[in-house]
Amino acid sequence: MARSTRSLDWGFPRWRGYGTSREAARVRLCDRHGCEEPGDCPAPKAPNSPERWYFCRNHAAEYNSKWDYFEGLEKAEAEARAGAEQRTNAGYAQASHYGWGGSGDGSRSADEMRALELLGLEADADFEAIKKAWRAKAKEVHPDVKPGDAEAAKAFQTYSLAYEVLCQAEERREWRG
Image: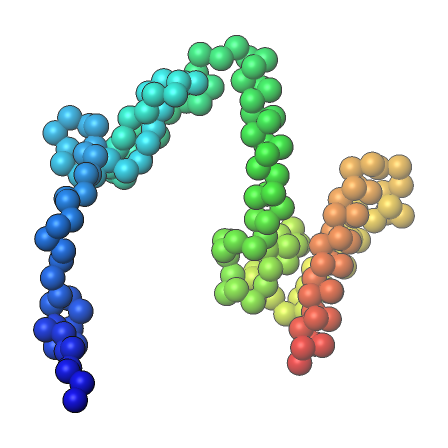
């Protein structure tokens, strides 16, 4: 007959032994004087320095609120670094439309919300109100009404683009049913 190898935890894994042979884990404390929290957020001690402070989350937030990345750099070098940062972070800017943000109930995209704002409408405007607002705005700045006015032509293009965005969104909604 096989011998039973039943554990002594009675089905509750937390009752098992914690391993007496394991050593205590080393925890680095926050470098802020008097703080007893774990220091798991590295922060540079000086601009362009490899040395780091290790703060808890609260003190890291306080430290970063006063941090100036471009401190001590010449103007040209600061502009070059800012440009390099923007180039390397371009992927995040392209994906920003996937994020949560803006007003509305979530049924409209950020582009639709900007188009509605441009036409001076609320987020819950129906398509008839959109069409009416677009016609009113377009009549004010139409190139036939204001011939030769470059600003009016640009405004007309902007309103037309906003209306096109909202038309396409309405078509998608109708198609989905």
